[in-house]
Image 1 (cartoon, rainbow, N blue to C red):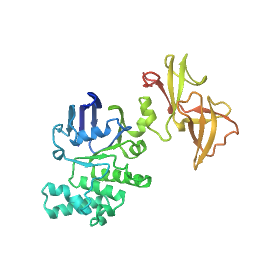
Image 2 (cartoon, rainbow, N blue to C red):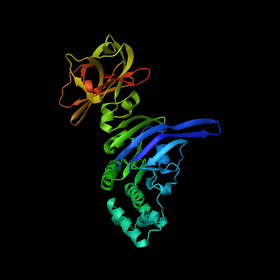
Image 3 (cartoon, helix red, strand yellow):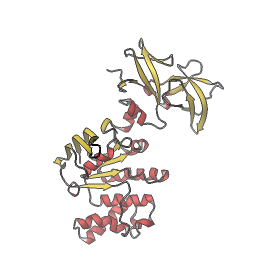
Image 4 (cartoon, rainbow, N blue to C red):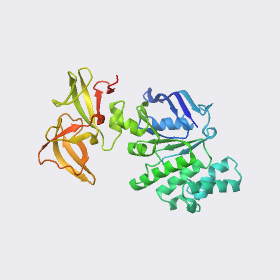
Length: 359
């Protein structure tokens, strides 16, 4: 099921202050069929509002929602062919797992025996078929989450919508469950939209991510492509663990300078800029490196060394460099580094948009 959002906008009215809040602003995207799509961004960026409009729980102020060839903008949720999994799972505590999964089918007047068969098949898909007689309070958080997914899938929806489905789980369960969501999505082939504020979560399992800020799409594409090729400073900052290092710089006579050190030749006009360098973009070169950092301390993490340093032009309190653990550092305060060109990004200081060589 391909999904098309045409100029989708949602404005909330604040009656007390008589002001308006634009939660989603002119969202215009096409979501391919059979893929796992991540809506990603910080709190208040409009991702959950977008999901609620897709589900029919919120009506758009303007714009259209098209599933396949059908305009579903004004359809009620139960007529959209969707499965929806909330952050809190919303299971019925007095019902068994089997009854919870069967509940949507009873509302659809599916005969009891067929409903039981479909509930068992769906439970098997999410690997909880041995828990059908338990009540929700007898299950772990991860198991409850699988029940919620099974209940959404048992209707055989065309679209599966997941609203922060892993946020209530601990770190280990979150890792395990996100891999399960990817497996289930691949096995069913259902177009799935996954809302999260966790960029690592989105990057690890999504085919495509849509990065949002203040209701506006900043960039859409394959997670690795966006990481390697961000359009603006917000996207560069939002994706990556550890996060990108940002420096204040200046371009003078086609030279990019950070703190008076020339770190690259560039084809851009003279201007003040922000310079982004990924942690893995540093090459230690004490004898001739182009950028000097003041070492704070070094953390050895198996195959990598993480150098925590400072720089007077850094936007953040510390700069983090990731290098191979076999590299021996000189016992000095000032460390010198070359920069991998593909890990260096330059942004206009006023617009925060990326400066590109092909423009």
